Image (tube, helix red, strand yellow):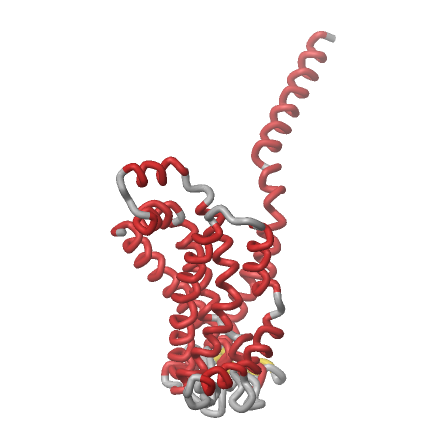
Length: 315
C-alpha cells in the first residue's frame, strides 16, 4: 500500500514538473505565435512567391508561361524606363524627405516650448496626416493647375510667368514633394516632440550654466538626445519615399495609369511596377521590379542610418 502511494506521488511529481516546464517554455511561444503565423501568411509567403514569379514569364491573366531564370532582371537592367523611374524616385525622395525632416524638427522644437492650447496645436499639426491621401493629392493637383491654379496665380501676382507644373520634371518633382512634406512633416514632428520631452531637463540647465545659447543647446543636447527617433524617421521616410505611389499617381492628369506624365517625367518605381503589373499584365517583370525596389529600400535605409549616425556623433 505504501509502495503504491509512493509510486503515485512520484508520478504526480513528474507530471507537475513536466507541466511547469511546458508552462515556462511553451506558453510564451503560444502568446507570440499569432504574430508569426500572420507574418508567415501575409509577409513571408508573398515575399517568397513574388521572388518565384519574378523568375518566370508570368502573365497576370494567362498565368505562368514558363521558367526564364534571371531574364526579367537582365531585361530590367537594360530598360531605360526603369532608370528613368529610378532617377525620378530618388529625385522626389531627396527633395521631399530632407525638407520634411528639417521642418519636423523645427515644428517639434516650437511645440516643445510653453504654449497655450497645446492640445489644439498638436491636433492641428497631425491633421494633414489623417486626411485621405487621395483628397490631399487632388487638392494639390488643383493648386498646381496650369491655368487656374492658386500657385500660378500667386506667381503671376509677383511678376513670375505661370508654370506648367506637370510638363517638366523639376516642377513636377517639386509639386509632388510639397504634397509629401505637407502630409508627413506634422506626423514626424509629433514623434520628435515625444522624444524631446523625454530628454532630461538637467542637461539643458547644465548647458545654460556653461553659457550655451538656445541654438547650441538644440544641436548639442536635443538632437543627440533624440538620435534614435531621428534614425527611425529617416529609415521610415526612406522606405516611404522610395515606394511613393499615390501622390504622383493622382498628380498625373495624362489619363494613363502609372505613366507619370506624357513623357514619364515623374514616374516613380512604384508607378512603373503598377504599369507593368496591372497595365501590361506582365506579372513576372513587375515582380522583378518589386524585388529590386525591396533591395533599394534596404540599401538606402542602411546607408542613411550609417551616415546619419556618424553625423550626429560628430555634432
